Length: 342
Ligand SMILES: NC(=O)c1ccc[n+]([C@@H]2O[C@H](COP(=O)([O-])OP(=O)(O)OC[C@H]3O[C@@H](n4cnc5c(N)ncnc54)[C@H](OP(=O)(O)O)[C@@H]3O)[C@@H](O)[C@H]2O)c1
Image: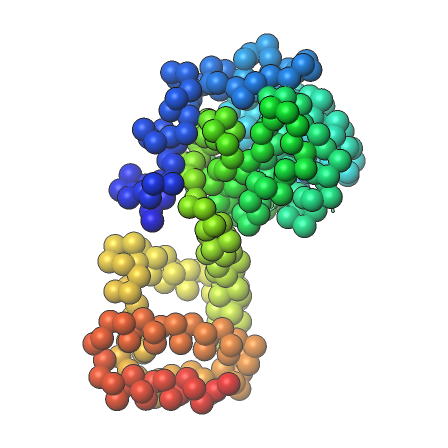
């Protein structure tokens, strides 16, 4: 499955925003780029700032890195962000500074009085307790931004004619809000929900410059695990690389400069020729002596890095086996060196 790029081959459940299979394709013409004209799931009886422009009013619950950046990105995209709920006075003030149109509340339920679409941007574990006392009005949509959980966790808040869903940008959100907002543009955004929610969320994804995709049923945990490896996993790898670079006299900045270039070359190679063909290094040559030297120095000078080195080396050996170019004897010698360390 390839998601969203121009050469994407999409599975039947993948939905790139703007394509014919776009969930909003049945919405009004011009829906994608003009939030003011897309089909709303349906307005409830309350008065909202968004109603004057025709765009759905959006509220954010949880002013952490994700809530803050999404609020700002959505507001800059021209959708009215009319409410935020945060337990923390400092974060409420910061959000208001970034998005002056937002009314600030401490209670999530208060946001529902103000908006058509409420975005719950809180830790996964906190979602059930926050949702439990919420009741959606007819036509309202409530989504969370979890990469792991399905929309079902929001079911307790459902009322007649309301909708639930998921809106997960594949972005590493940090406390640098402007950086996160820039990163949302061009990101893949996994959306989930019934038809009405999908229409709205696809339009929202496109409005903030993202590429909406719908994941195959049951695949969210694997999709998210891959994301965690791509982001947190890479940071763990960088941390180990920096530790080894320190042995060679490099400070963190120096290590990131020297090895960062190699990482970029490797990624470019993998994109150009595929992951397997991009693998180089001692294991591809069956060079057991080099591996032994690495393991000896790691055990002596950087023992905390050993586990990570071994895990990666075993995965590399698996790739080399699949390639089928090394003799069984060489593969065995490398495997024996890796098996010696437990
Ligand atoms: N960080 C990422 O890179 C990333 C990327 C994509 C998706 N996500 C998803 O987005 C969601 C939020 O992520 P985040 O990194 O912004 O989370 P976070 O920093 O851990 O928490 C976000 C906000 O949730 C509120 N909160 C925390 N604990 C709470 C509790 N027990 N009860 C009520 N509110 C609570 C706090 O807001 P207030 O104090 O303002 O109320 C906090 O600032 C998660 O579902 C995460 O999986 C994260």
